[in-house]
Length: 127
Image (cartoon, rainbow, N blue to C red; front, top):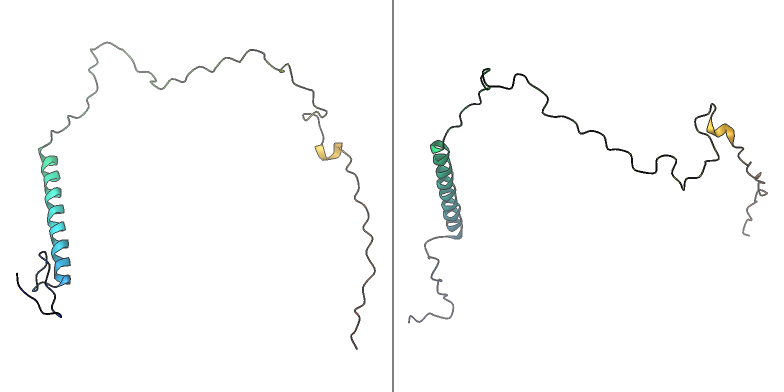
């Protein structure tokens, strides 16, 4: 065991006295870039070694079928639910919306109460 003086601190086992924190940071980022390039190289090598896909060729005319067609046929519409229109619990509207004329003209809007203005106030002056 090495004795140290009260003002002197011992470096930890992971750091060196000759490497500054900035240099450690640069080494860390450099190592991370090397690992990333290695992973990228492995992925690129796997891409180069993968099998190629054969292009699609249409079937020959001799094979049956004899025509095209739409492979995106629509589904038929759903049948109506039982009960039909009008529904049994439906009530007739008071207004007929398909008749001629505007809806605003059919109802008389009650007039607003006339507003009686209050007399004008005269400010009182303080003596």
